[in-house]
Length: 451
Image (cartoon, rainbow, N blue to C red; front, side):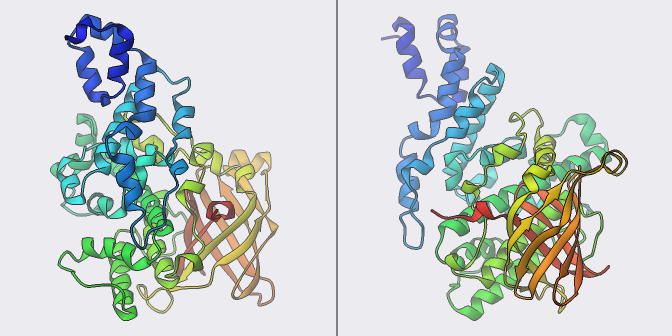
């Protein structure tokens, strides 16, 4: 029987099981098919349920998380309630784009890294971080090693390797951007920041769902040392691997190990993967470290997530800034870590976590807001403690996300300067006394809670 002989209701039912790209091809072949299947509700249904309808996708994912050393996924963790919210009221054009991005993510989630590198789309930073921030269930399939190669290539800002061929592999540049070196460099920085987001997200997800840190470390080691075939169980071997990975990641941080008072978002974002490996190698057992879990971070509540595609990499990179610099967001309980690099730039010590940071934040004066672009003041009543004792934080947060803070220990009298940036994962930056002491990272305490 021909498809054209079927009633519209049955045609739409069949179409629900097609990938978005196949449906778009189908409705171009015939007027009747176009009239029956170009319904926006049909594309919404495909965007919302495509992963569940992909043969074997859910079962394969659940089986992966049942393997020894992994933390089992609960079926309810594969619901996509945020998809329902974002699709409600979206235009037909945006709905089709989102359905197409979901299809790309599902395809990506089934590929091994080696196959992915030859089939990845060049504009990945225009849609993948958006779906991660929206917690699409297919993101549970992704590992950080998938993104290390493009991240490394995009991080080469001052070498001849930033050729048009290399950049066109990962950037969706217009002809004008390709000719304009400044515009091209800015776009490259935005994509690099978004790939840092992807690596941080997937690393946090893997650390939270893997009992043995060695398995996560091996993902990075295999990328940086391709001929490595050993095990990471022995303590000395594991530490050597971690040191090697940290060294490789440090090269990717622009201005690494320098005290920069105007630290950029790109620099702060690039520091997070290094911080994660350093923290996890110090606190190897999953239960002994306090880290955010992506599924607990309500990105869509404090990020103005743009529509996918439409060259939106630049919009996504900064879409958290408006809400995350507000006193309403900054107030509350925070926790975090800092590294000490004073005994050698790549010999990193991770101190015990900073805990029970009760952030007291107020609105700036009108003059501070208009003249200095201050968005929030961190008041001197802000308190926390770490292994050195109780401390006070005071400072300010600029509307572009630049954070300047003084940390003072109440009993010792010692004080340090923090300069950092607000990122989607918290505040990240450098600390010191006009010279580099290390990196710090603080995040909302509620993002770390385990059920």
